Amino acid sequence: MKRILAQCTKELVQFRRDRLTLALAFLLPFITLLVFGFAIRLESKDIPLIVQDFDRSNLSRSYIERLYATNQFIPKQWTGNDPVRDAIDKSIAKAAVIIPADFSSDLKAGRNTKLQVLIDATDVNNARVIRNSIQAVTNFFMQQQQLIPSTGAITAHIRLWFNPGRLESLYIVPGTYGVVLWIFPSLLSAIAMVREKEKGTILQVYASSISATELLAGKALAYLIVAIIEALVVMILGALIFQVGLAGDVTTLLLGTLIYLTDSVCFGLLLGVRSSNQNAAVQGVALAGFITSLLLSGFIYPLNNIPFPLSLVPNIVPARYYIDITRDAFVRGTGWGGVWFDFVMLIFLGLIFFNVSRRVLSRMQLKA
Image (cartoon, rainbow, N blue to C red; front, side, top):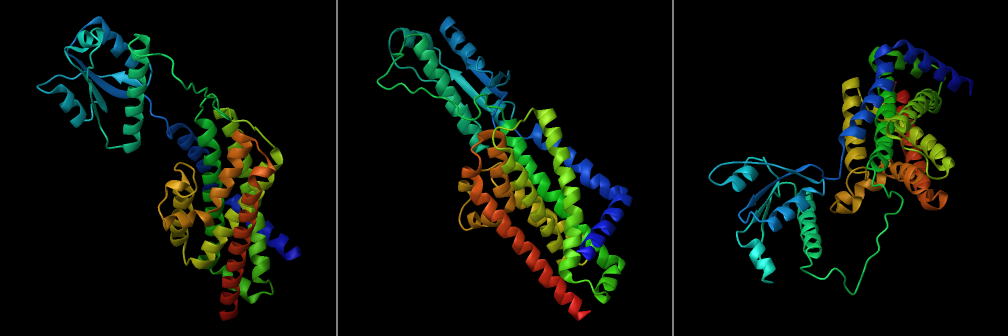
């Protein structure tokens, strides 16, 4: 135990003296939190919409006002021989509504009338949102004008559960914790491990009586302490800036964060043991850590949308399980009954990372 604590103390002293590493540990996570928290928005807003009204009646103007009253569309104007097509082709507008000249007369006479709606489907999800929004506005307008019955045989009373205010920060920020607390602790521990090789001090370790387990445990303990401070800073700033508060049992968040940070540090040590220089270690964290935690963890995209066989990869991505824990703690609040499996998987993956690192380092020590 004394050797582990001595190794931990040595790592913390080296860490404190390196200003670049200090900035990497605390400044970059804060910047990442701000970028992800403010920049990522999954709900489409301020969609540019152009309307060509050939009817120019009170009824058509009322319909246009109803479209823009949703606060989802913003009006766009464009001139030319074919203003609608030109506006969409040049990305001036994402959608266009063409109102025919006989719009109001057909409606008043009880005849069917057809609106032409053109939607830029470059972004398929955005196109689906635009289509549904225009359809909903049209149905509401028809009911308001008493052109179709306002009541039906089935009435759905919809209540938004867990997040009735539809605050995207409640979804994005807890997920950001999972990405940030995976990237930077693993990056720091990977660089620390590789630095021993580049400076040649790893040979002194090989020549000493310290075992691979003690060396790795000492480094892991040091950077786990740094990671815990990172987590406190990031979560406190997230709570202050984005007003994200706890909704459930705090013990799941505390214990889950501790296990997850241990996994992150052990993953970094694994990459550091396998890498020959700092560039390779950084690239390994970026590829195997950042990309998987961002795209294959459920942070932004639903996991059930990932096609087979790539859908198998998220099963070994620790960020997937930690994001479930954070979103439960900050949004759902179901407690241990809803996240116990995530703890099992985090412990299992952490043991694999540490054991593989120990075996690789032991082989290197024997060869030396």
